[in-house]
Length: 492
Ligand SMILES: [Zn+2]
Image (cartoon, rainbow, N blue to C red; front, side, top):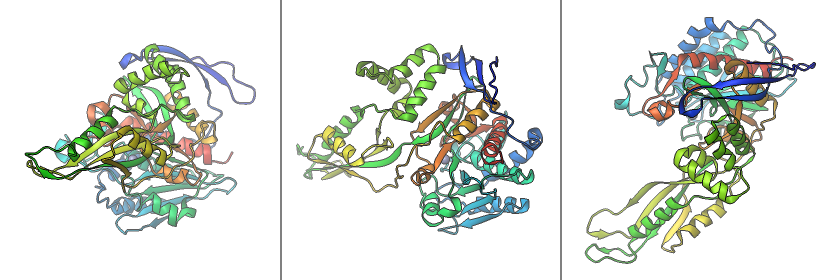
């Protein structure tokens, strides 16, 4: 690493030469111009990170061993644990619950009030498990080969435990604060935010009101065991379900009818399956693909550059390539539609009068839902098939967090300092509890620990049939969270 040209006023331009060696053809050296860390962040003696590993692991394993799978959630047991730890450390906290079994916990460390608060979040519930598919019991938090295995390991008990440790350390080291640091452990993120963030925003907003917030949805990507780049979730897509209902005449199966609802629905779903809505980039995704192109291997980098092209032919070719090879990136380019439920008929000799399909639609943050629904109807082009929005929970649209803000710069500097990687703002294709806060104008950023790019496809990612995190990355994430919070909240 070569660092030169440090400016007189503390900000310097450093030229780093990163060697990207590893899997997937990422083995090339890239020269990157980056901002060096601004200055020493922590005025006090920094925590002894090595000595804190046992404590970090203990809290992480403790929350992983509490079964808070949602449904039914039962997040009360996690909140009881957090409360007891915070109480023992003298960190003031309060519980807010719409349902006694699904409470939320808010802890607050007071600052001078010079600046508005900072909110750090982690959700206490997890998705369900198919225990038979787990090599280690999903709530054992077994340590093996450097990993910890459990449901919630990377969604979201990593963020939860790191946020808890941050509160404990800020208190223990009596870090002087310019702003309150608030910790929210919320319930119901996995599909029942009415108990969690929605309830907190509607009924107790002053308790969590902040200028900035940190939650899940970002992290550091490792390839071939080496950190390559970090992503910070700055905006997210909005989930909407669309139902397609085909109606026809019922009758005896021995006499086929042209109005057969199953046939009409199948044809509608096939048209939707073939359709890819227009590519539309926003400020976040534009920056993401530009920065990714600057660090990716040449072949892939060309595709990322091509999706930004003003030439529709060039863009379409890159779009086709991404759809086949990197579907995650394809979804980031557009409002996506995936037909996920198809239902109709009840016996083989009866032509049913109705059949129904459900489309999982993930809208770009600025999509016009009514126009989009009309577009779906136009693509289907069949008066026998009605398209309508389903009743599923959705999330409100909000303002994307800025990539030139104080928190983004603090995250960027910490990623450079701790992982030696560049930072990319990103839009998640999935929804998070930050949506409700962004809708209130809060600048929210998704962070997370480093995970191997290969781990998801191997079946160890979030919501997979197994879930795991490297212990060493849990410890780095503890330091990352603390340092970013202190950089942003500490007295300057
Ligand atoms: Zn989550």
